[in-house]
Amino acid sequence: MRVTRCQLPVPARTATKSARPRLNRDEVRDRLVNATTELVRDRSFYELSVAEVTGRAGIERTIFYRHFDDLADLLLRAATEAIESLYDAQVELDDGREEGDLEAVRAAIEPAVRVYERHGPVLRAVTEAGASHPEIAARGAELRRRFNELANGSLARLPGLRDNPPADLVESARALILLNEAYLRDAFGREPRVSAETAVQTLTEIWAAFLDRGASNPAGG
Image 1 (tube, rainbow, N blue to C red):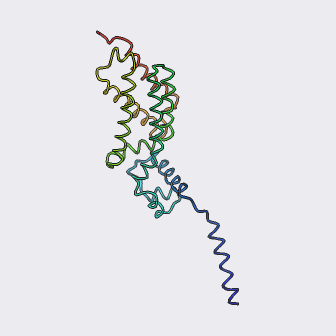
Image 2: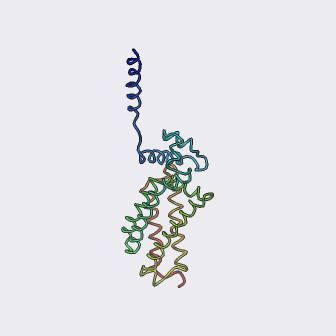
Image 3: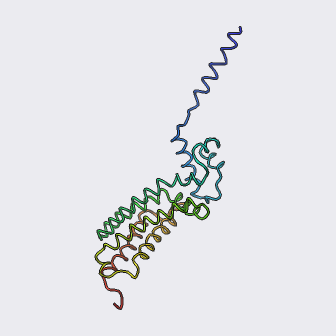
């Protein structure tokens, strides 16, 4: 009887335990990142808590700290794919500007719009969090510096702008990049405000207007 009493509970406990799927490292991180992305779509980064994120992800709070230091660290990791994709899109945009062809510019702008269409809430949250998190602010500043270098280099190589340069090429590049960021963040930082097609057309027209001014004399010149 002792043998029977000892053996009966063991198979039951083993079966219950083995029936619970264990998430691997990537699955845990993906759940947490996806939960954060969903939450910042209609919430401010400052309103979030680790408990809320883990609850949405279905992950225990203790497991969160095995993967991230805090919410700021999670936000940086969540933004990594978006930031790298956005930089790649800006490289393509640089190629389009260098060619000076309107359709090439449109084709290069579209990937940047698609990045914001997918990752806009996270990129908006990064901007918000940068106000009080130096590490996030530094990452944003580095990204902007790289974008400005791309724009400066490509604009300087355009024949029309060499013949009739803007008052300050560096400031022109900075203004165009800031315009892109602000417009796309406004359009896709929460629920999409416009369609991706409208955003592409709008930015293409703005870039075309600036590039065209390089081929003509300024008023009064």
